[in-house]
Length: 233
Image 1 (tube, rainbow, N blue to C red):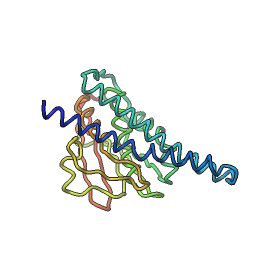
Image 2: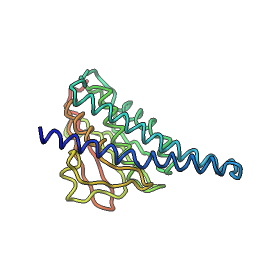
Image 3: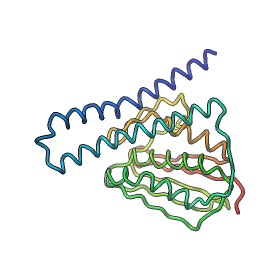
Image 4: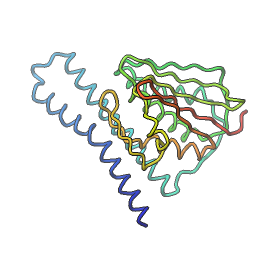
């Protein structure tokens, strides 16, 4: 019981941490726009609204992860497998974050040897890919790039997401997918970074019979690799 309460306390601390920055950004930016609207030109209004939109998207992503986490803890996440096109799943994730990438001037590259049809759960797989891509964009420097590769690793399909951003120190790598991870790292545009998305990535990967791993070097970026162990059509 003590351990369970500690986990809950930790979880609510993560939520508060993640919500604080985007909520404050929306409040301060909306107040600034309202007070200075008459002196803004069209470009300045557009820039300000894009910042508000970015903060709101951050909250929406957090709420999606929160709902997924709640379902996971209550045993409501059911894995419903079907044959899924990995190429299409990656493309959907890229489309989902196209605007966010454009706002930071980040180019998303997608390299694939060929498509794979793998027995998996499309909803859970999509959540994993969105969180990995969101994480890569968050810690990438503006006007850099993120590379997604779809390849075969000893006959097993593998999706790798590589950024060239701030990276992760060696001492934090071992706990990167755990709720007791102490790493609290803001993104390159001051985005919140509690790590809740990566915790879901690990849990969902196990549900769809996949393995997640990470390689990273401080100030040189990170590569997260997802190996899909399901049946291949």
